[in-house]
Image 1 (cartoon, rainbow, N blue to C red):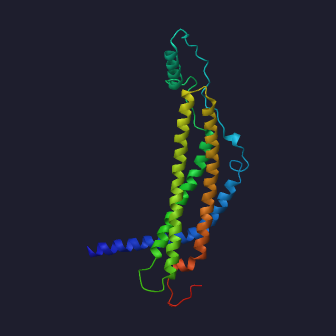
Image 2 (image 1 turned 45 degrees about the horizontal axis):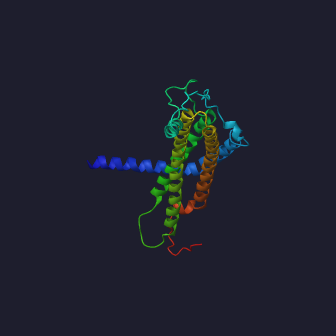
Image 3 (image 1 turned 120 degrees about the vertical axis):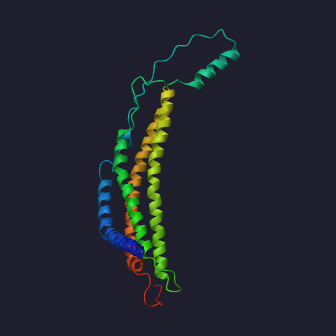
Amino acid sequence: MAESAKSHDLKVQEYKEELKKQAEQLVLKGFPETIVKLNQILETSQFKNRRFTDVHQDLNIPVPDPIVLNSHTDLPAAKKTKLDERISDVGTKVMILPSGSVPTNKHLVDLVEQVKPHIRRLVEDSNLMKMWISFMIPKIEDGNNFGVSVQEDTLAEVQSVESEAAAFFDQISRYFISRGKLVSKVAKYPHIDDYRRAVQELDEKEYLSLWLVMSEIRNRYCALHDIVLKNLDKIKKPRTSNATESLY
């Protein structure tokens, strides 16, 4: 039983050491490579100098011919008003669309598929960094804790990046939910151009948001690379033999 416990402890220690090597290699080599790659993507025609109209897409919901209603001019004024209100409020019951289904916006779906792997990578990389710093925080002792405070501040920054990156996924799903609701409005009220325009405006907003997400991913990598490099010595060796070391 004791031998099994020792074996498990040894494997855990090996895992920690391997993780430390991966994280340090990520900071020194992986982050710079990722930053350069993201800069190149942001310079492509998909993101740079693209017009908003380039991401518009036809909804495939035609405007039907006006429906001629039976005349009800002989009805009393009160009943006539009620009938008009009921017709305008109900809209069109959508059983099936005459031109087939309404597709998602292909331009934006292509961008989403390009952006999502980088979001996932940032979540994974920041999680690795979080564990690396956590493993190097020494046991609690009195005095000489300046290096430990550097570790904790850096860890807090990494955790913030991880949370923000995970929130990017939620932003993408909210876009599709919002677009679906607007498209259903277009199907129900095909004669109202404002709903059609609202879909275009939402698509333009999402295009700008995806550009911003890519920029923020690049910026977060830059910030993590910068803060870790500046404090690498303190992160790896938070305490020195000299307990009276100057703060500056």
